[in-house]
Length: 255
Figure (cartoon, rainbow, N blue to C red):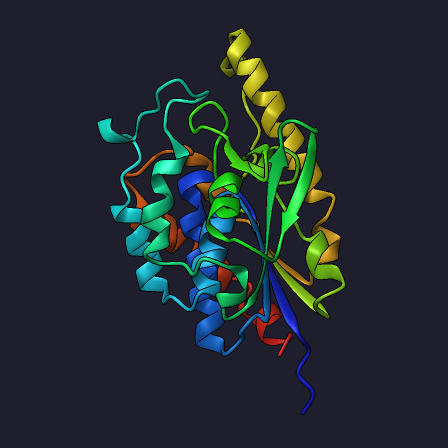
C-alpha cells in the first residue's frame, strides 16, 4: 500500500515547545513517522533531538533539567544576558556534530542579524545553527557562524514550512506560539503595545501558511504560559498531547 512521505514543521514558542512532544507522542502511537523536520527556535531544539533519534521522554527530560538562568551562564562583553556558546557542551552530549549524523532530514532556520535575512541550515555543523535558532533576542547572545551573527529564527519565520514543500508530499504543522484576544485595559503601556505588535506579526505570518499543511495542531491554551515559564512542563506536554488527540482522525487519514 502506498504511504506518502510526511514532514513535520515545529514553530518557536520558548518552553511551550514542550507541547510539540505531545504531538510527537500521538504520531508515535498511531504509527506516523515523519521523514523530515523543519523547526525554528524551540522547534529547532525539539526537531534536532528527535532527528537524532532521542525518545520523547529523553527530550522532555532535557527541557526539564537544562537550567537557563544560572550564574555560570551569564555573558561578559557580549550582546545578551546569557552566553549561548556555553550551551555547546550540553547539546554536544545529545547531538552529532554534523547534520549528516542525524537519522532524519532536518532543516533549522535562524536570523542573520548582519544581512537581515533568514538562513536555513540543513548540512554541515549542527550544534551552532540549532543554538542560533533558539537564541531568543536580548536574553541570549547571538551565535557566530562563518563570520556572521545569527539569532532566533522565529524573528523572521516562526513557522518554517517552506523547506518541506519540495521534500514531502504531506506536512503536519505544530504551532506553539498561540494568539488570543486581549482587553483594551490590558494594553496599558508602551511595552505592551510593542509586545502585542510583535506577537501579531508572528501570528499573522504563521497563519498565512497553514494552507501548506494537511493538519495543523495549535493549542490556544498555551497562551497562559510565558516563554520562559519553567514550572509547568508536564501540563504543557499534556496540552499538546490532548490537542493532537483532537486531530487524531485527520492524522490517521494521512497514513
